[in-house]
Image 1: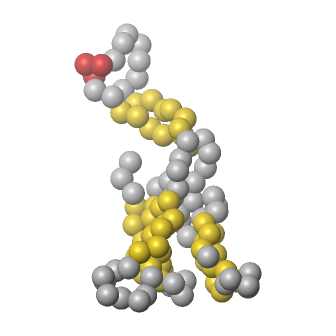
Image 2 (image 1 turned 180 degrees about the vertical axis):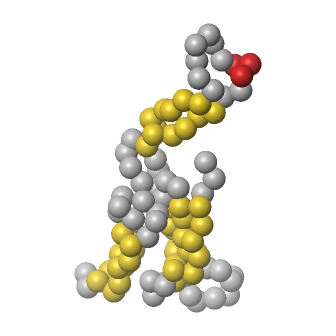
Amino acid sequence: AVFLVSDGVMSSFSSAGVQNWQLQTQAYWTQPAVLRVERHEDSLMAGEDLVSSIEMQIAPSLAGFKLHPHSHWEHILALGMHHGLIASQNGDILAEFRLPD
């Protein structure tokens, strides 16, 4: 079983509850998240700013998948508030990326 907590720590545990590995990632999130919203000038009311902020609940994602259809190796996709990563089932980070705003 693999778990991702809000500070970006991802951990793997065996079925007996023994920790296999743990790593710090950039796939973190906060609740509620303060998000920047840019609006078109035509939609503004008098006195409103082009850029404002809203609070929104974030839904992080953690999923297992295979890179190749016939592979027996699982990989892990973790998505946080601003960053994501792909890790091997052994806890090696294979790729990290920034998510679009």
